[in-house]
Image 1 (cartoon, rainbow, N blue to C red):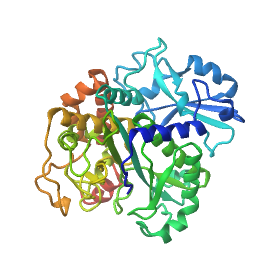
Image 2 (cartoon, rainbow, N blue to C red):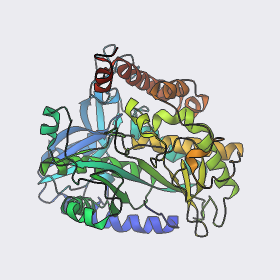
Image 3 (tube, helix red, strand yellow):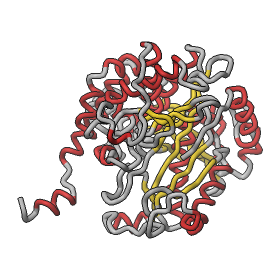
Length: 468
């Protein structure tokens, strides 16, 4: 798992400038060099699940779209994991007639993927046709937290490390078989086993090369704890930029798997017999001079407050990190996923793992699963941590030894129902997200909870068909 060393904000800006010079536009309209040979531009916006939703335009229309935006039905503001619109939300629905919105490309996100020929991708912000930014759109929600940091004179470096399972069957074959009896890319777990990752290296190398070509450098690839489970880690960057890279990466991995006749899943817990997949978040905060806010040799007052805030307020913000019923099946004792909200120095059993003591402390937050939406999860982490700093909270002593045996630490939410109820009643979420955004997200959360309550699983049938 990735160790993020001390990096100053100045160094981040220098690195960003180097990346921009090679893969990003110089201004509002992308350079001719970047678009040379491009025939199609994918204009997309992240939805509530963290997927890219949008349209493909001919390159001839790109200047017009940059200037005026691209109209698209605003379903993406209300869709669930099935890509169907959730009813009862204020932002759109039958009561509004599902009108068009406008996607305004963020030219700084323009990239050329190598899994599609003559194509460029650009991530957009969601606006109304009247020209107003849509506050409940995932990217808008995270931008609010980025602005909040700036108002406090703070900046962040953040990185997500994503785990997934790789299977030999194609998506189409997996679907036809109900995603049962899939063949992992290796027959036993390859946790840091170079022999195992050598067998999977052609696929992993293609991912690294594809990401590098888009200015998204993968720092580390490694085998993880389950058969066919992989982990890829990124270098840290700024807040919205990291969330954008996260969703582009997931889209790219799925696209490359499809092209190679394979499949991957970012489900939090795809198999009852194997470990779940996390999306751990590494975070550092810096003051205006670029110095670490969390401390160097020990936790600073701000660092202690941040840790205490995350421990105290994650239960009521958990849905933003773990949005599905399946998300909560990942939290099992001894699984490297936390079962309680504790912290410790380089302790992988804790929800918060403090690292780089003596260099410039940063935290690894291990609660989110690979199924999280980064725009929501990053926002929730900052909301909790900054509230702890604001209140001057103090964390309990660092956990030593087996964190799963820590009886004093509060347990993580048991299931989606518990998590949704805590989120519904969270005054912190309502205040920091705004009432409009909080109400919107509660509507999405309730819809997912209700869908999970209606489900009849294979486990239900196998246990109860004869015995009930």
